[in-house]
Structure formats: C-alpha cells, structure tokens
Image (cartoon, rainbow, N blue to C red; front, side, top):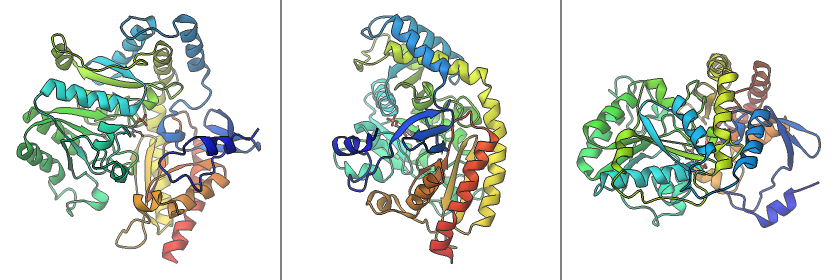
Length: 440
Ligand code: PLP
C-alpha cells in the first residue's frame, strides 16, 4: 500500500516548499528501527524529531494508552481524573526541584505559549521576553516570535511585541568574536545589560542546550550566571526543555547538569515518549500561589486529556526500569570518542559537540570555518550539502535529522552499541560528500 501520493497531494509538508517533497512510505517501526513498504529497514538515528525517546512499539506504553482509553476517554479539564493525578505524582518525582504545579497541553509550542502568558500575568505590567537568536521555541505566535532562527522571518512583522533577543553561547563561532574562557562569558553578562537597559522584562526563555540550531552546549559557567542574573533583575527564568528533557542528556532534565532551578519549565516530546501528543508547563510554588487569587487566563479543550496523560507514568516507569539515564551516560562517552575519531578523518567536520545521546556534527567549507549551508539555503528548496548527506544515509538505511550546516545524532535512548556503530559507520562514509564538495 502506497500512502505517499495522497499524503503528498492533500496534506502539507511542513517547513518547506511543497514542490520536491517525496515522503517515504513508512509502514511500521520497532525499537530503534523503521520499516518501509518495500521491506527496507532504517535505523532511527535521531528518534525522528528528537522525541521518540523510548523507541518505537514499547508495549508498556501502548498498554497504558489502552488502559487510559478504557478508563475515561475525555472529560472537561475542570474535572479531576485518575490519569491526571497519576501523571502529576510521577512528574513530581522527576522534574527539577521547586516545580510545583503543571499546565498540560498537547505540544511544545503550546507549553511555551502558556509559559510566556503565565510570566506576563505574574509580572504584569512587565511584558517583554528575552530569548536568543540561535533558538527554536515552536511555530505558534508567541513561540515563533521568541524563536531566533530563520524560521521566524516568514511571519514577521506579525509577531508578538516585546521580544528582545540576545547572542548565544556558541563558542565555535562566538557571536561576540571572543574566545572562551578569556571572554569572561561576555554573552551571559550581556543579558544582565539587556535586562537593565530594556526594563519591563517579565522572563528570559532559553533552551539549556540549543537543539535544532545545532546542539550547542553552553560553557559550564553560562547557565548558573544567567540564573543569578535573572534573580537579581527580578525576571523569571523559563527553561525550554522540549528537546533536552527526559534523559536525552543523561539527566531527567538538562538544567540538572548545572544545578539550575528554573521558575518555569516547559517540555513535551519525551514526556509521553511521543506515543501521544503532550505538552507540559511546570511552575514554581511562588507562581502557583500567585494564581490563588489571580485569574489563570488560559486553557484548551484538549488540555489535560486523560488518555494522553495516562502515558506519562508508564513512560517514567520505563525510563527507570530500563535505567536509561545510566545507559545514556555510558553511550555518551562512546559516541564522543567515535565522533572525535570521525572528526579527525574528515576535513569538512569543523566541530563535534554534545552530551548524552544528543550530538551535533558541524560541517565547514574551509579553514575559516565557513558553514556548508545556511537556513536560507535549506528552506529554498535546492538540496543542500546536509540534504545530500541525509539522503545518502537514508539510502544506506540510516535516518538522521539535518540542520543548516549540521547533523543531529539523537537516537532513541534504548539504542545499543552495535546500532550506534551502524549509524556512525554510515555517517563516516557519508561525510565524503562534504569532504569532496569543499576540500578536494
Ligand atoms: N522548543 C524546542 C526547544 C523545540 O525543539 C521544539 C520542537 O522541536 C519546540 C519547542 C516546539 O515543540 P512542538 O513541535 O511540539 O510544538
């Protein structure tokens, strides 16, 4: 059965011009593997969009959905349900210290919309929000406005007012043209300057590790400095852990890597391991108390959907039972070692960086570290160098997620060493494409 034709003709391929879109017809998936209608298998080396953290076809999670369906399929969010109570209990065991109350939605972008609205309500009349250029926070109005990368250009000037962007801790190509550690983490100090000069800022939102914009791990001083600066300026700190949460970095949440306690945390993807669509906005006790006598002016029909929420305890149980945080830490060192070997072999690899099972491979054209492509190239429809590499890898049975000038290695957390080797061996071969294009 070929689904691709009707899918292509009558539904949108997102973040692309429609011409040239040829969706592969996938019919099943199990563990870290995807299968097409021709009987071909593909290693899922990026867990789709960095979200199928438990891999495909997990029976425990599927059972939780069946049980959830037999319980209560839907009631208005004004009611209490067993699924919601159990999801809350499980979440409280794993979220960063200080997070006390949750708002449940159905995506990462909605989790961020809620976080920003909450910040503005709590800090009213302060209305501005600080985000970073190299960032992605989602595709709806507020989240897209906060997003710093090229994708926001299409909807400007119809953006949420009051967004102020700051440079990111991207040491490989420092936006301030400084060198770590002599820079004194100028990019963090710059946030302090911006908060003071702007005034009226309600919140700072950051991905603890920049995700779709190239897996950028900040220097160790950066986030503790940002947290201190936000507190000193009476501004809320929102950690967008839509991609970095749920064991991806070897911790439940990436903020744990630096011992940071955000005022608000947003997450989605791995919260249900993506078996059903869920978004979570978690807030501190202080914020929760504020709404005791202030209007919580937000809500959706599908908010706190009982069947969706029934996945959360099952997913958390699975992360624990499979001891995935330890497994991810162990695999992290292995991936790091192998990626560094690959970097040595390929002139087109400028940088490899990451943590846990979240790694970026940055490709360069020359000794000046010029990127092999930009987001503008990527969304202009012509195959970029990264597209050529991802297509080649797909031909060789490995699905990998590519950005403007980088590849993202973020497999299901259950992946084993042999599977990692398969993915990295194919990547190693594929990098001849960028080597040949620019360095021979
Ligand atoms: N925030 C981050 C850091 C993300 O990576 C994404 C999606 O990739 C989002 C928010 C938006 O999530 P969603 O696509 O579920 O709306």
